[in-house]
Length: 179
Image (cartoon, rainbow, N blue to C red; front, top):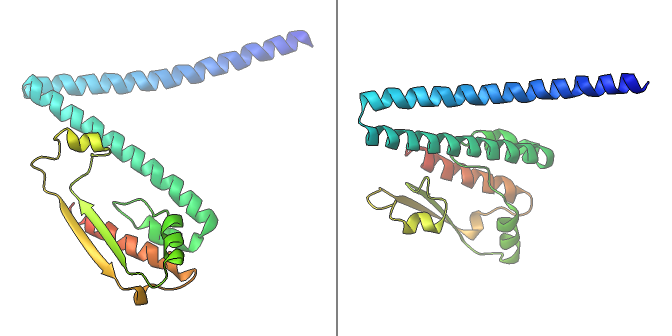
């Protein structure tokens, strides 16, 4: 029995090693591909251009992957609580679905209040105030769109959630139009 247990432990350890080895191999292949691409670009462009191109590409890929992951998590949560809103949220091309808790609480606390919906484009990649202070926004075209929604046009009760998602679709369309 103890021999069987030891054999099982060895088998498990070997499988874990193989899985780890496959992950490492995949990572190494990605690194090799990246270095081949960098070396090719170094030959085609001068070194500073190639480094700038790859730094932007890597940052863009990271941003896209993170956004897609966040969207999937948000859609999963939405499917559990309000599945009827999932198709609308899936149609968002540039924005994550809204988190309506705070907005709905404010609307309940201040009935009869107009709402300003503000959207912007051109600040992509600027996640923190320090990004703005670094000067990376200098020379960029930044567009802002403001919609004023009269309090009389804001539905009551649970219909507000759908209304908020419809507003968010308007924001998403505006941001996506920047292409």
